[in-house]
Length: 266
Ligand SMILES: NC(=O)c1ccc[n+]([C@@H]2O[C@H](COP(=O)([O-])OP(=O)(O)OC[C@H]3O[C@@H](n4cnc5c(N)ncnc54)[C@H](OP(=O)(O)O)[C@@H]3O)[C@@H](O)[C@H]2O)c1
Image (cartoon, rainbow, N blue to C red; front, side, top):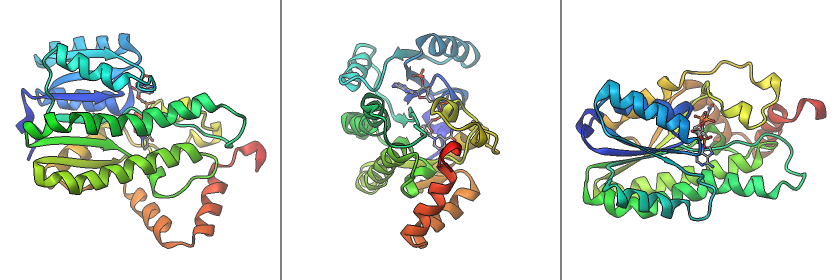
């Protein structure tokens, strides 16, 4: 399977207004894949859609939607029905982070994080499986994170949400590969996007080296040829995975806690 085989098919990309999702939209458009782009910031989606229609001659629809809303996935399904969109690709990319100590009572923000990072991918996978299977070969790309490899003190809810989607996605790979649906779990390395700043990362942490989103997305799409369950786009992340798996739990928690402890509480 190659991405070129999907020319003329439809892809749904969540979180397409910025960062890795926007890059997925651009690379898929370059392969003449039609796009349904979803995020909250509809103006950004519309501007991107117009540019992609003009430069690649593809069909692009946009849906301004908050995936934290209880009925969001039903709204997506209705939109797809109204526009006769039957996707062969689903990119579950939308995500939000949250740095800092797990306290302070911001219940609503934590529940929104859980809805966007964990519940939405679960719901879209479940709801779209019949469509994807009917049009096989089809692809689901679930964007995970290196945060899924171990618990993360001071980024606790984000890491737990990514562990959920990571394990869900790997299990679906095995369940669905016999049915013509390739489920890829994508672990981007640190990537230059809005993500960390929006998540409240400490200024000291924002200066580190980050890959361009194009590197992550190219690695994901190239992997369609071999269809591995897990795609890790940065080599340093492989070492982190080994450390998380092999080191004693107390050491892992201590090291990660040191890295993510707010600087004013060191
Ligand atoms: N950047 C990294 O270093 C990194 C590393 C590992 C994993 N990841 C993962 O990669 C994915 C993409 O992150 P990114 O770095 O590209 O972040 P980003 O630049 O902040 O983009 C996040 C995207 O998600 C959308 N989004 C956020 N909340 C949403 C909501 N409630 N409803 C609908 N859409 C929503 C945003 O659009 P709107 O604001 O317009 O809604 C935006 O399009 C995330 O799942 C993240 O966990 C990122």
